[in-house]
Each structure stands twice: as C-alpha cells, then as structure tokens.
Image (cartoon, rainbow, N blue to C red; front, side, top):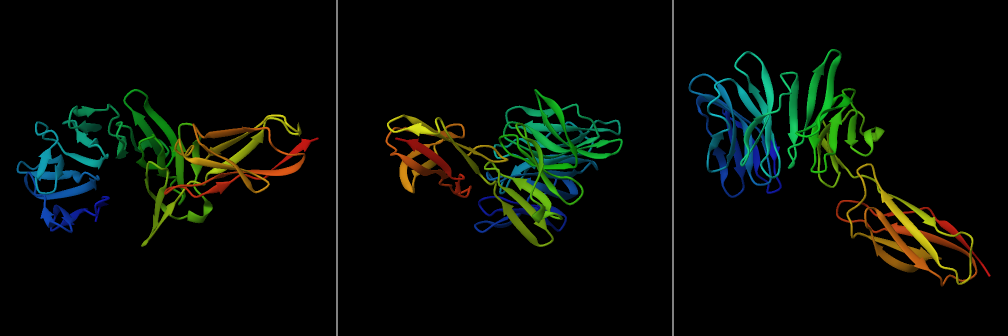
Length: 320
C-alpha cells in the first residue's frame, strides 16, 4: 500500500501494475501506457492517483488518473523518464521529469495550468505539494541532504539538514532531520523538533490543523499541537468600580486556533464571559469585581483537532 484517502480507497501495486481498491468497487488495475509495469505514489481525497507507467517505446511517463477511468499521461510529448510523486487535495501534482540530456527537473502540473518546469534541476526531489502549489522535499548539497520549501513566487527556501515529507495548505512543513527526529517548520516560528518522546519515529504527514502523523515500524502516532493560553490584565491592582480588561492569547507551534472558537473567562471560578477568538486573541472588560484578591483564568474549550487548555491563574487585586 502506498496511499489511503479519507474515503478508505487504497492505492498500491499488484502484479507490477498500479491498482486502487475500494469497498464498493473492489480492486481495479490502472494499467500502463503499453509497457509492462506501472507504480502509484499518491492518492488524494477526490480519488485522484499519481505515479508513473511504462510506455511501449521503453520510456516511463508520469500519470494522473481516477479509479475506473484509467490513467492520463501528464505530458505524452516527452519521451524521457518522468514520474509523479504527490498530489494535493485539489489536484496539483509534483514529480520529476527528464530533460532529454541525462538530467532532470522538478515539475508541477494542474488540470488548468498543465505541466510547468520549476527550474530546480536534478539535485531536487519533491515529496509533497499543497493546494497553492507549494512543494517540499529535499535537495542535494555538498555535505548531504537539506529539506526545502518552494513556491513559484518565493523560490527555494533552505530548511536545514533533513527531508521535507509533507506540506499543508498553510505552508507548514513536516520533515525528518536524518537523525531519527521529526521536525516542524513554519514561516512564523521557523524550525522546531517535535517532542523527544517520538525520537526514532519517521515523519509521515501534517494536516491543515497542524496534526502530525509519525510512524515507527508497525506503529503510528498522531501528535496534536499543544495550545498555550496566556492571560493579562489591563490594570492590576485596580479599584472597585474601575474597568479592567482581561486578554487571553492562544498560540501553538502550528499557530493560533481557528477564529470563532471560544475562550471562557472565569473570576473566582465563576464564568465571567465566553468570548470567540479572533487572530488568536480574546478580551473581556468588566467593572463588577468586588474588593479583594480574585483568581482569574482563561480556558480554551478545544475542538475536534485541539485539546482544551487553561491559562495559569492570574491574581487580580481589587482595592476598595
């Protein structure tokens, strides 16, 4: 098995041919371009599969296809070797293609834009592409392999030693550092190693929620970014009747939770307000706190992707 999508469709190889299997349709042979073999490298949730297949002329060409409708040669005019390695959820494809002179280049392909060469040359190997056409993978340096992030407008960005294995729609990259430790790279936070508890595990994929899939032997784990809540007061100490604004900020290595998710503010364990997050921040203003010292907290309620999280208590002093 080389791929599995959200519908449970499996992509793989059987009898030297690319195949897909689903509960409704069973096993389907995707065929070749007239040659003996084909391989599949990826599948998306639309059921699109990508890989490469032998031609009758002895070449191997990249393909994209659907189960039940065969495979389409991404560029039938090129007779040199090519292969597609990854497909995004909206059908963007990346892979490598020969230049007819013994070299190769990374390509991107889309249903509307067709095939485009990146000019990255044969030192680059792509592994993943997102809906915006951003690519990650690795490239050869004089000292070894370095992970990269590439876009049409921004060019290639070196992510340091390792291999980029997956990129989500936000351009966040999951990779391996080549010493048995997965890493996460984001535009805002740079590169961070994932927790030591998964040392020796391989990086597999990152989804749009920032959840990370890692694998070791026959075991897999999903790691969820921890959301940290910080809480501040606009005036501490304050006076009875004075307006005080409490502000909670939610952040993780992946970024802030989605807008609209709730922060619950409590004063002395009583709910003060439930406020939706906007750009990772939520605030509430009150002038009703009585004299004394009160424990104030802010709790992120969590969702299907992120666990709930609470701030450290803030002791608000209200003078008479």
